[in-house]
Amino acid sequence: MSLVVYLGALVLTAACLLLLRGPRAALRDPLTASTCVAVALGALVFFCAAPATLSTVNRLTGVPNFGAPLTYGVLTAYSCSLLILLINWRGGPRERVRRTVLRCMAAYGAVIVAVVVLFTLADTPVERLRDLDTYYANTPCAREMILLYLLGHSAATTVMCVLCVKWAREVTGLLRTGLRLILLGSLLDVVGFQAAKYAALVARWAGGDLDFLSTIVAPPMASLGALACSAGYVLPQLVPAAVAHWRSLGAYRALGPLWAQVRFASTAPKPYASFWQLPQERLHWREVSIHDALLALAPYFDDRVREAAYGTALRGGAGPREASTVAEAAMLADAARRAAARQEPPGLPSSYRLRATRTSGTDALVELARALTHSPVVAAVRDGTVRTSHG
Image (cartoon, rainbow, N blue to C red; front, side, top):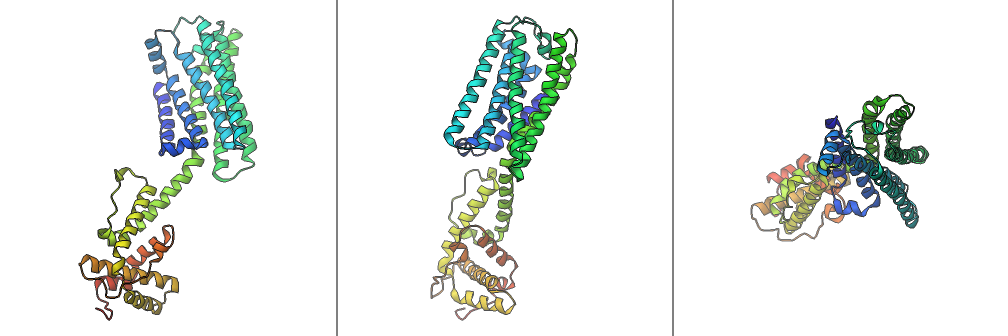
């Protein structure tokens, strides 16, 4: 059982680390910060609830069942973090959000204190790693402690279910998908974990024995519910970032031919530990380096090469926009060839600025790279088989 629980903790930890890829920026955003806290606390709940962890905590503290209030306290904090995340997700006036968050923290903080106090007052001498809830279901103070943490968790999940149903009607796209996953996770928690726990407790109070609901049914259902909820929280934030990185990777690769043509002229410093950079960071560095190289090659630009290539492209059936890009690529290829061969710049320096240096974004650079790769006009200029009047 410990292995399964630790696996759930590992998955949630990985999700939290992905959200914290940029820690400073993430922690400045209340929504991202509260998402990270909720996912991290979910992972901590799994970790603390594992029998191996409970046994270790009990042994290190020398207090039988000390791991129980620890786990209940973390679970209560997790319940609170879920509500705070929903509050930040919903948004609104900053002061109102702040007041609501503080009230939520105060209420669940009081529950955590009560759990600790009740455990201190309860008589729980026999260590129970898997069935403490039912074993001490009729023990004074322990009974109230168990019921209190369950009620606190039930209140949080009930609010979540109601809000998710309401908000899912008002939003679309990934946000709606995330809310539906949160609703699914909350329902799994309510039906599979909480209902099982309550049924087992009531059976004990009535003199019966349905302990298997608490020890066998509830834990895996809680794991499934927490994973579904975490996926719902993380998905709307990670998917747009993943799509952006995927597009950046495509643009990074598309700029490869252009970078190969001009990299010898770039003096931009190579970033530290570039191997671990994400695609967006790699693309940014490549764009900066290419622009640096274009600036270094500008003295070698020859308007005659550009004008001749423009006319050739038009005669070949290209439109004005495409012909202009081909002409710029031809002029750049000629400049790179001359600079690499350490030839003198043309007698009449060009004042022309490439469209890629006049516009923001990556599209113009990508078009220039494609022209360098696919245009026969550019290939002829690069090979030196086309000469202008100066050559």
